[in-house]
Image 1: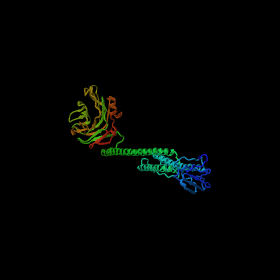
Image 2: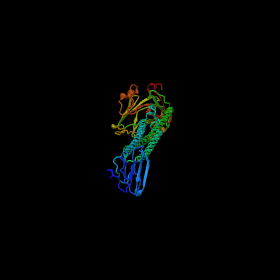
Image 3: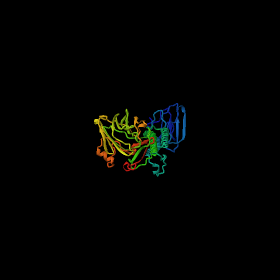
Image 4: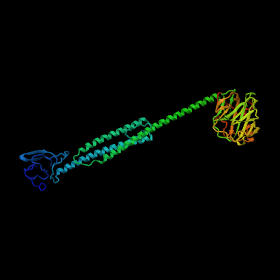
Length: 471
């Protein structure tokens, strides 16, 4: 009935425009509601903004109320009516919808501005994180007005890690504030609207960035701890090397080492004892043949020349020994097997001695001053010289590397001790003895870094080819 312009039914309330009488048809644009007889309430508003209207409400039982001066306000939401209305698109409803749409647009603009600000914050934090990883002093390169909150220190600094954690906490607080403000903005709108999609995407992006920042902080902390441990190990290694160098310097100072060239030196044992000796630092390989050559000058008189050198291995103290005990002739021991050598060192002069041996048939040869003095066979035949033993100059070993006997000690000077893994020819031996063929051993050369003096034995500069005549 309302849609056709008829008056409301009898007994029902009606809302009147100014100048109308009860029971007449409402004016064009007036909003009419069907209200029960026991209620007389205004449910709608009509008219253009800034105009005064008289609403007359006729209720049951002869009650009548007239409302003057009602002005339309665009911010007042339209309440839901309890019953259906007949409203042919009045102008007041259009204005109310336009106002609601404008309010939603302003809210969306505010959220968009806040999203842009948060995106700028994310980009700034991401840039700072990149500079932390690269270790570049980015703060010195930025000339813009934006203040860099990150210190330009070393990328593994604990202060930098703490600052990253503060930035993560600040970002988390800002996310919480945005989440609290979003429901308030939504409640301001009376018209139902779908939930914004952009804030949800923003939250996901912020959560992802927060996780990445936390992961980077943990990775930086792990790397800092690893670097600290590595630095500690390197410091220990350097200190160990320094201690070894200091020990070496002390030994060199005690041994009065000042020789040039490096192989022009001698080991001197001044008295017969069981604590002065020289030691070769290089380990020997397994040998099936060898030639050992050296220059010797004995100072023991006529009471035995002692032991110029001895080589012992685990389980066999007499793997290779050259010695002269008492008035016995000089002997060569290999694996405790003995061969007597026709050599003599009793005139306190420099002599060149060479001993050659091969495991095949146990063949051996003895040279003095470049001449063959004797040879033989069946000396420890088919026995290979065992590796990784200890070679001592001037003492005979009763155990591996020790238990020296003073009665078997060598007294005098030793130089140019060289060892080969094959038997030298007589011509090669003669060239070495005449200083015309300065051959160095291919297994053990006479080098300063390979020979140490202990117990008071000294190392001093000496060139045997130049000094033996006047020594």
